[in-house]
Image 1 (cartoon, rainbow, N blue to C red):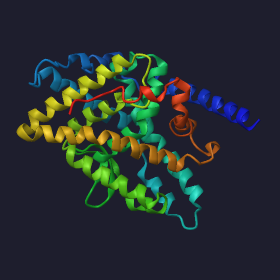
Image 2: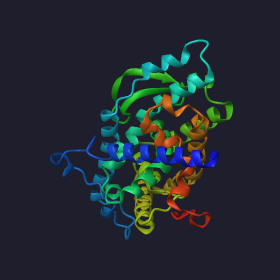
Image 3: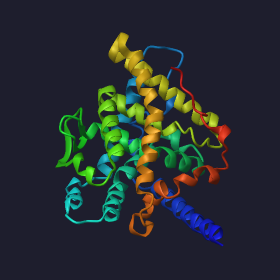
Image 4: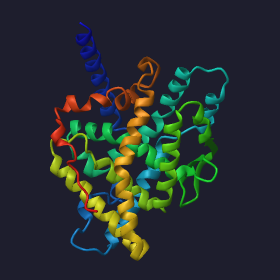
Length: 316
């Protein structure tokens, strides 16, 4: 009986998941047709036969950056709310609920970014959901590295770090998370943010890296796995070309280090999900349920066995 109830509960969560993501990747936060032609956002523009970065590829990278900025403007975050975490005598469960609901905005930023990529929107809805469920938390963590001041451990409410564009003057000292995260999660998150901040030396590099993470779905191979694999490979090639253009002889080492961060990011994302997975789902945003409570059941829902892992490969 218990198993039957659990299955029923899971099915209900999956219905919420499908409805919420379908709504979010539908018409909301989409560029209008007047704007779309200004952005070259298709991986088919990447010339994989040449090691030289073309002007078209530079425009593609610039457009990816603009999509990151767009996702931040469309989903403004309020760092002033972080004061709620500092209220004395709050239970750990209450703090976890606050954190889970706070994460809903970074998650929506990822969805907004993804739904404006033609490589993403051309996939079937189930494939898009699979990619988002697997990659969204990791992308949220990675994207936040450009908001992070590693010297002070402070997040700043930035639209564009390179352009020095701020949403407002609010900020969040990450040390407040010591009251919520365990010591291992806090340490691993800080170390990852600092390392990625150094490796992704500008927002162009970061934007391409985020796109690679989106299509690097190793735990779930969508139906059209070859298409997804090729998209990820092309963006990986683009990153290599961009680094070569910017860094010269040192580019290959940076490229290898960035690609090697993908397994670490996957583990870190799973740690964040696991940490708040025991929160009462009735107290948090339905949209966030899609990325926390049902993520651990992803393989069974898509019928993927252990042999299908690692379907996206990178040449190091």
